[in-house]
Structure formats: structure tokens, C-alpha cells
Length: 505
Ligand code: HEM
Image (tube, rainbow, N blue to C red; front, side, top):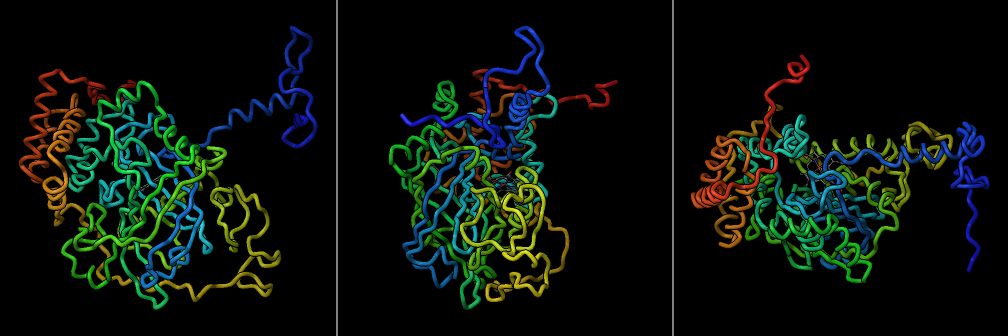
């Protein structure tokens, strides 16, 4: 057997013992000069970094994106050209639960991908649903408050969730998907991923096309019912981690078919719905998905913290040939993620190995937290400002994307009026959901209502009715059944009646 390595301090000096403290005799107190004990305790206190404010519980793996189709007429992105193979990282997540939450909980799933392309990192930070709850970023922090814990009871609050949703008809589409079978996949391998937002592709001729990205599971869709999930969570809280890790460890590599939907700029102008509204899908018969390639996950992280917890995904990371759209939510996300990473990981979070591009990096940002590679990222020490005469990096005018056509007067956007929040949900309800799935949808909604004030349930029922009378009737029937059975009240809603000031008096 090879010799075991010898213990050192974190500064590399040989260290005597990792088990016996420096003490004034057997009964005596410890000596302050036992610096390595202090160091060890101090390290323990700093082992956690802030968890993500949303999507804190996650599962990740490395893999490859292979391009087999030809979409070169839409994009100049090298990673999307026929034959390209790009190393990548995926992180899946639930939205609301904390880092220790159980995996098999009904929730939207995050679907984050980081592609280490030769032109820089492209991050596709999507969900397992093609739409979202709100269309204006002003509402996002409030929405997330309803998903997290009540400030007084410190319990999850179905009252807050349904109060918000019933007052936000644009959420109907996503709520219906969340409460349907798709809201509880059995593992990350059995769900699709969607950019949800409209992005754009642009080609060498400077033409822009609006696109949606889709990653379709090749393992088939598989879901738990609530009852199955409840039983499973009693046995293991880590069902996703187990499934994903063990599949990859055993050589069963999960795959997704990568597709895009494309809309020309002129088509967008004529489109009878807002193609940049995140609460809408693009109908497949009008915008058929085009096969682009395959994503495969084939390598487990060696260290979860270093490669998954430290991963920083951001919609702001695009590469030449791929860009954003006017979607208001996307615009807010372009700011929000990088800001979250500066707080959670440090200013130079993109130097952390899992985030570091696999291509040369040259910029004029300087010192600060996590600038571990030191110095100036310009490649030459005298060029630490611009303009300079010392061969510092210069502009890339050839990579300028086509201008974004914008019209209209800047004004507050009315996200409440003049939008059709019902037609697409009706199509989903009437044409996509099978009868048995509808029954589960009704029961899943009603199952969350014990303890929610009746007027909130009634308000939500009237929204379901605007989608389809059968939707309202089905949920009402299921709700009556739950009530008749004296439904379990997980946290009968103590909507706090005193303000903190009153309570203190
Ligand atoms: C205005 C709307 C939104 C804002 C402000 C927002 C903000 C955030 C923030 C701050 C994080 C935590 C990032 C971190 O600490 O690493 C996060 C995580 C995440 N968000 Fe959003 N979000 C929004 C909407 C969306 C939408 C529409 C999607 C999907 C289409 C989405 C998908 C995700 C995913 C997948 C993660 C987890 C990223 C990871 O795996 O590390 N978010 N979001």
C-alpha cells in the first residue's frame, strides 16, 4: 500500500495532530496558541455560503451537447453549427424548498445549462415548463414571497399562494401545469427543459430570428401522484439525487433532444399574441420544433459543493449568434442573476473553476473578492486601463449583433389589462389533458386548499371558470370532497392579525 500523505496546515507546513488539542495538562484549559484548532473551528463556521434565494435545492451533472441538425442559416454561434460538440454542466432544482428540502415535492423544476463554448459560456437557465407565473418582473419578488415561508408562522402558506394566484390571472397557465402531472416528475431525467422565454439567434448576414429552446427528455415523461410522493418522501428525501447520480454512475446516461422553435421578425409583428409574453407558448402547428441535436449527461461531479453549489448560471451569458429578446422578465433576469452571484459567491465568481470559461478571457475588471487568478485579465501587465499603448485587448466589432428594433414611448407597462390569459389555458385543458389527468389536476388543486379562506378559493374558482366551466366544476367537486373528508390542514392559516409593533407593545 502506498504511503499515506502526511498532514499539513492549510499553509502547507507539516502538522502534528488533527485530533489532540494543546492543553495545560489533562484537566487544564486549552492554549490560545493552538492556532490549528482555532483554524479548524473557524473553517467549520464558514463551510456554508448563502443558499440561493430561490432554487436552493439542486442536482447537477456534466455532459455534452452534440449538434446534428443544421440551423446555420439562423445563427453564427459556433456551438450550434453542425457537428459541434460542447462540454456542459446541468443543474436541476426545485424553486421554493430550501437546500435541505425533499426532492419529490410538487413544484416547478429549474433546468439550468452552462455550455462551455469556444466563444465563451452560454447559459440556458430555464424551467421544466414552457411558461411562467407572471409577465412583469415587478411581480417576481412578491410571487416568490408567497412560495417561501410566512414571516410570522415560518410555515409555507397556501393562503398566500392562492391569494396571489387568484389575483394574478396571468398565472393560470403555469398554475395549471404545476397542478397537473407535469408538476411532480419522478426525477430530473424524466422531464423536459424549456427556455420559456423567447430568445434570438442571429446569423453572419446580421439577420435576427426569435426562438424558443426546448430540451425533450428521451427517458419519457414519468410522474408521481401526490400520494406516491408522500410515501416516497417518508422513505427518502433525496430521490432525485439518488436517481440521477446512480444512473450516471452506472453508465445509463440520460439524454434530451435539443430543438428550437423559430419565428421570423416579420411573423412576430403579425402574431396575434405577444410572442415575448412569458405566460404564452408558441403553438407547435404554427411554429414546429426543429431538431438541432442531443444533450447527454455522462459525468457526476467529483465534489458537489465545488461543481454544483458554486455553479453560477445567468441568462446574461450569451455568445455571438445567440441573444435576448424584448421579454420584460428576461430583461430583469439579465440583471438579477449576476447580481445574485456577486452576493452569493463573490465579485469574480466567474473565476471559480466550474464557472470559468474554457476559452481565453480578456477584460479590464480588476481586483476584488475572488480575484484568485490575480493581476489583470488583459494578458499584459501595463495594459490595466483603456485606451492604452501596451497591446491591451481591443474591441471585437465583427461580433456586433444586429440592432434590436424598438418602437413606442417609454411608459409604465399595463400587464393587467388587455391580455388574453385564458385561451391558451383552455387549449391545454380541452385538447392536451386527458380525462384522468384532469381529475388529478382537480384533486391536486383542492388538496392544497384546506385552511385557505373561502373567498380566495371562490375567487380562484371564478378564474378557472373563465378558462372552462368544466375546470371550475371539477375543482369545486374535488374541493367539496376534501371538505367532506375533513381534509388535512397542514398549516391552518393563521393570517397574523397583529403587526410586529402591536405585538411588541
Ligand atoms: C424576473 C424574473 C426572475 C428573477 C428576478 C429571477 C431571479 C433568480 C435568482 C436571483 C436566482 C438565484 C440565483 C443564484 O443565487 O444562483 C434564480 C434562480 C433560478 N431561476 Fe430565476 N428569476 C426569475 C424568473 C425565472 C424564470 C422565468 C425562470 C425559467 C424560465 C427561472 C429559472 C431559474 C433557475 C433554473 C434558477 C436556478 C439556477 C441554478 O441552477 O443555479 N427564473 N432566479
